[in-house]
Length: 59
Image (cartoon, rainbow, N blue to C red; front, side, top):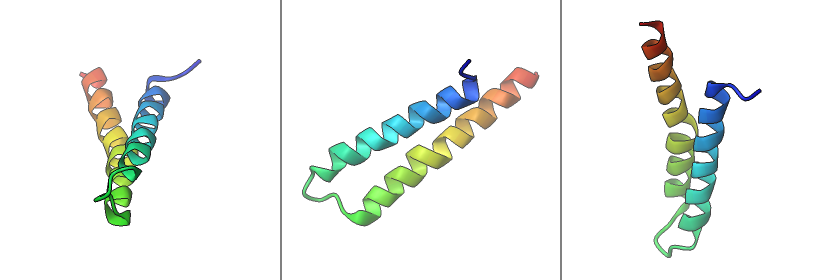
């Protein structure tokens, strides 16, 4: 069974991958922007969303 936390991480990981693939086709897309998208969308955003959802469930 897929937990909520894993679903959020999987969803944001897929979004980060999609943005990275789409962005690599753009002429102004550079390595720094690629890393920024992967870190923010693939790592920081799911952590923030899961933290918010955990706090909401506790109340």
